[in-house]
Amino acid sequence: MARIEVKSEITGKVWKIETEPGRQVADGDALLILESMKMEIPVLATGAGTVAEVLVKEEDAVAEGQALVVLDT
Image (cartoon, rainbow, N blue to C red; front, side, top):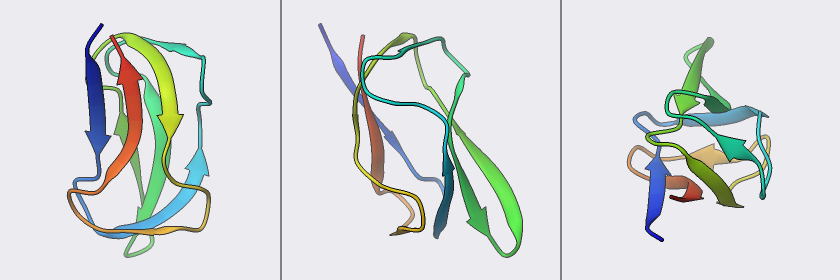
């Protein structure tokens, strides 16, 4: 099994978490929504697998390149 870290492509705030540990996801599924400059930006799964960890919570500030979710593939 490989682990994939899904990282933020922008600096922003976690607006809504759309997944939870143990959930099966497909490539391209929305994992969470970030808010930046009043825009909502979905963070998508970069491969199919099982959500191992959600590393942030709603309202957290995140930096570009920060790991947000870990997937087991």
